[in-house]
Length: 465
Figure 1 (cartoon, one colour):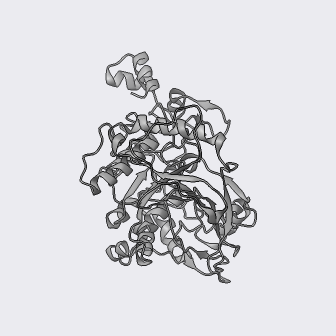
Figure 2 (cartoon, one colour; figure 1 turned 120 degrees about the vertical axis):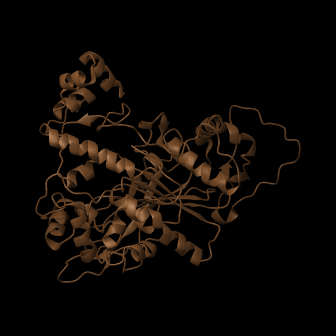
Figure 3 (cartoon, helix red, strand yellow; figure 1 turned 180 degrees about the vertical axis):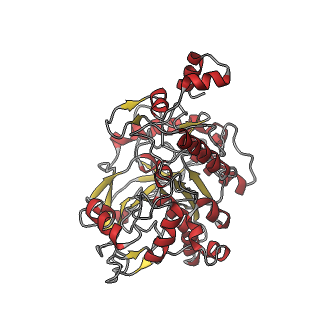
């Protein structure tokens, strides 16, 4: 896995100039005696509540932010029981009134929202979920994956997880932000601008106002839309809003497949040919600066390492070095049958090739559990956000706060913090050794080549060394 630079993203993170934390009273502690009279509390009579709010000054704790965040989490948890209102963690569904913005089948597009009173930070998450590029495979997608093409059966509420979680123990740095989840129902990698016709049978209409965090198609959607959102807000006069992007699993390579096959469906079709066909079918729109660079071959803008140099907004990239979606379109299956020597070399070269495109970026994947060189994704994101703030104010970055992290893994799942591997046919869990042997990895041969004892090599593999 790898890390990013401060210039592009997948979802847009809109940060307002200042923030406030609302509370009513404290339990289980003494009230400190201030040296001067505090400012009078403010009340929001227009909303019918009397919730007291006060500003926070973080200057004194900048060098010890981890300890401070622990205290904030404990404080937040202690305040839950004494909230003046019943806590509601769920995001609620809202449909767009603009009839020109629809899902593939013409049903209304929408979003899930959970507001956080007092917070001026917004997290807007673009959902991912592959794509289709002609009427035949869109018809098939509609039969098997209808929720990605229609809003007719969307639930009324949705509980956020990961960076959208409202729980400080799961989401220590963003739990109290305003959360927006935008379901993916256009099958166009968040790029389409084509109305429904008799020939296409589907609409590809995307008119995103704000964007921020996503996965797969959503990650690419952030790269395609982050500058557009920033420019839109600036054009509306909101010059004080900082727009940032987080692209999760949207950094694909336009490489050659391990075995070339006919472009029949989204699984067998190579990445480049898929986008070439899709951009015509969707009426795909790409960022203006990237379009100018790749005039006539605009499909290049769907690949992260090609569009990234033209993006002005700060972006954090999160990507697996051995991404399952990338391997799938390259005709490599990691489970189901042993991997041949040629496939093994292809996988290793893929990791090297992807790593080379991320030298100027900071990369991680998965929320709490996975770590790259001892740093989790929430911590890396926090460090990145702090670095943008510190650079703007000419401050030195805090110690122990890395923003550029690239794993040195030479094969899939060699990082011991990676999630559990399961055989796609049996559903059984596999450890790293079982996984590598399943892929045809010869421990005895490798140990002999390295002049090592096989048991020592097995130990190194188990520990991720």
